[in-house]
Length: 154
Image (tube, rainbow, N blue to C red):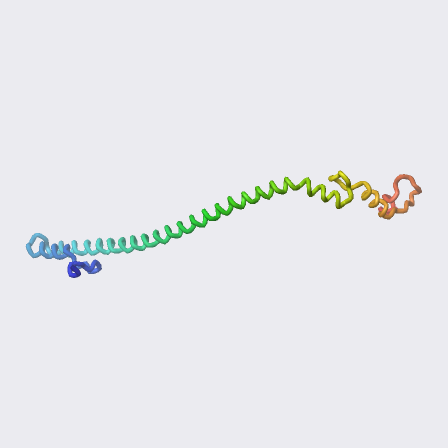
């Protein structure tokens, strides 16, 4: 069986070359015609071999890219699953925060010493803050523009 396998790289061993030689011997083709047909056949043979090699290379690359695509799909599916799980966890945490927000506000109010009030600063804190600020001396003699003229250097 191995003797039947032809070396595709050797064009002169092809049956086409043998047939052309037989046609020249029988007188059906001239030697010039045989040489012309052999050169055209050799060119076609080279094109076919090059095409075959390119096809093998492209098929190998296609298999590799197909494998890469499968890997990327698996990664994408895993990421989508993780994103869905993360979204569910975020929704759970939001629900938990909303359900506990009133409790946190009540606890914060107790820590600040505010009974029943959860918004704003308690009045006592505002009064204490005003008392602790130093007052500017007025050189305008109490005419309602204290501090403004002093700040400009008048």
